[in-house]
Image 1 (cartoon, helix red, strand yellow):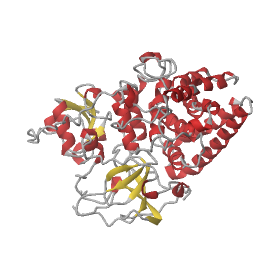
Image 2 (cartoon, one colour):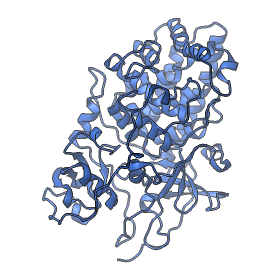
Image 3 (cartoon, helix red, strand yellow):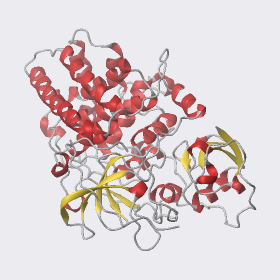
Image 4 (cartoon, helix red, strand yellow):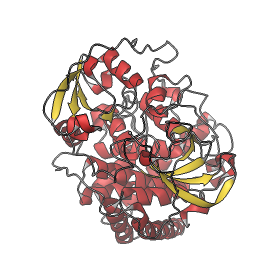
Length: 513
């Protein structure tokens, strides 16, 4: 139950479910978050008079599910958060958004008491069931409120008065959150709410098999098309059904495998990553399984037309000429031509592929559609396609960290991407998505394995190096929500996101462990 709380009464541990103004009019990226420090309280006071607090989702004994209002506290003397001109969000220009196939972009702003017992990291082999539970960026340096909110350069939570409790159940969804999702569904679609039914560790073996079968299928489809043969859409649908079932059980597992296998899933593996992220995005929005299958097909096939482009054009190092870029843009029509020769393919799949490069302000291609002219699936595909491209190495541009990619996409919301969908996409993958390389405050490097739905900056991670960035022989799973205390009362926190391949780490070394 949400309770109206004036911002001068806010405390660390309260869960902000709604604001007294539209979310898009504030610097808060995610709709709904747990207050973790005084900086967030200062920012809320700077932008809002009151907020709606969900006490059932708040933490601390005084915030247990109760409709009684919290005792009033005098206004904090903390000064409101001020954004400098350099931190203010600049309106993006058409040339600042890197298309997947565009010429190399110019440099741009991308988008509590006794102390708990000593922590004993436990080694978990992914694949065995376990209990449920480049460009680098310093989130706190010159990155405005986004960095301060999500970088967490300093953890401010004090030691609990008891040993870490068992993992909490998934937080209940507020009516506002449900309505926000439902408003984005295609016409006639009734949204639902999915819950993870298995742990990441239990789902990984099945996810690994799905990825391998999908990779094999993509290679066969490509060969068939090159030989002038039509492919059987029924085979695609079979693989897609397995993908949907895995993502419904636990989306983190398939995102983990697809991300960690990005370097060895072939030239057209980009489509597999898009398919996984796009289907997980649809699950978050609550689309029924039939629509999740459509999203999975769109992701797998959206770049099928590149088969008809010269290999040297696709692999060209450096900036494309305007003429070459026009040739690359033709891959959309090539893909539609190939699908036009495929019987029984769903029309929504075709539409999604046709529109994945369209942009809200009309600057996209091939038709220059504007706003509502672009379908929901096309808008979603455009966001996911751009995210997957930014976080993977391209011939003309180095990969950036997932954190940096999300900052860029968020800054392009409204002009190029549908802003409410951008917000939901960030919620679906997390600020540091599964499979992301991150540096911890201890200096160790880790890979994000799964997210805590309540505290998005406290995921479970696999620690793969020591503080000196040397790979460890036995990677250990650590839950940052119940992390060990180091350097006094501060816990381990995420210092920054890292791009793929940082410190020479090959993520393929960990997905089979």
